[in-house]
Length: 395
Ligand SMILES: [Zn+2]
Ligand SMILES: [Zn+2]
Image (cartoon, rainbow, N blue to C red; front, side, top):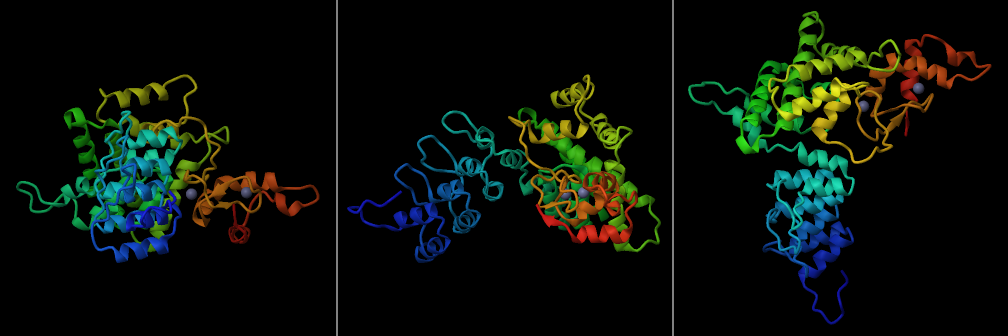
């Protein structure tokens, strides 16, 4: 969008230029000088917020929202909303900001496509999952107010935000959920209340009439199931163990259980049966989502239960991406690699540490070279693991 020389230069032109060029300094200075409404329109009826969303600029989107930019309306000729543009940009955080500000995920453009469908169309899978997994904070805070004769709410108010964040997670790998819980211990300390509220949310999703959301209902059930399991491990621990040590141990015990390879040395049999039990315990057995999962799980040569659940919650990918995953928690595009064999990737040292009991044999095999016996020691001692962890290099 270049200014034609004969056109007068207005704040609108300058702000659209600043957005197009990603010039945050200029953008901030225009906003600071302009005291009025920030819903500027360009010649195509696109607002400044829509441009900033399309550009995938989290800062600009946040600044415009802080100034009261309208997240819903617009005059775009094909009825694209700010969320449609955010979805096209592939910036999930921008979409999250717009959703928090009240963007409606089900709004369609003039060809009947929602924002998440547009994101899928251009292959922004993480954004698809972010939008489809979105739940307004009010859904959770509903349970933090006493209802009817209650003197105490189902959910203590201080748990509303941590639970909201936990529910919005896109990576639903059980070890990632355990790590998330480790970082928000309040949820685990109140595991009974939290899993109870999650089951109530599940029921609520199934009883919304035409707005019933089976997928979200299953996700709530799944999260409740994982929290209960981690809490069971915690209950079985010695009561006199040091509190910090305990938290550390719970994730480790949980990870060791789920990541332990089966007889073939590759497939995760325990993970599979853990997750199959979760599907089996889903109380709404008449619904399509349940039937689809059971059909996949009982098919000949079934895919791992984790990928079936992941597809159910986050949607089928249009094509198989060669995206690297963290070997421990399934996070996409992890930052680190095993420095020794370079064949596995991890988010960080914690993920590498949790996976070492599985990886150490393969690592020694892959990195061993003739005449170098030190690399093929069958057992890796603690000192070696420490140095291995220190050698973690950026991927
Ligand atoms: Zn990880
Ligand atoms: Zn290795």
